[in-house]
Image 1: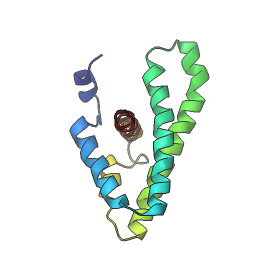
Image 2 (image 1 turned 180 degrees about the vertical axis):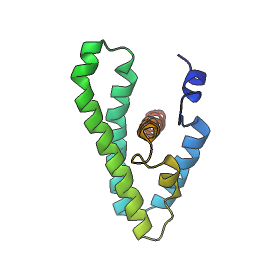
Image 3 (image 1 turned 90 degrees about the vertical axis):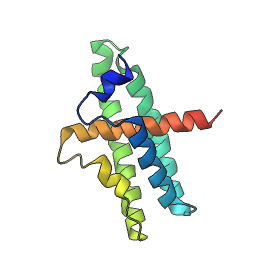
Length: 131
């Protein structure tokens, strides 16, 4: 599979859009200590989730069945942290429009995948910055 295959999927999050949303999120976090704490939680969960995602196509059906509850729990935890950050930032007067642009998972099941994609981008960016 290629990046082109991914981009053609429903609710895909193109790299350029993900980077724009990520930069907006970081700009709103700024030097706010509490926001940075929540962001660190997001990064931790995004890194764990990206491991599940990156191995998924390599797993057998049995491995997927065994791993799926842990993957789902990790995904849910990451979404909760993203929502927590957006709520906190809004409480501080920020727009948190990046979260709105990711979408509401309650309205569309594909949005969960899109938010998972965003988590994978966060893990990618952190991995590249760790060199």
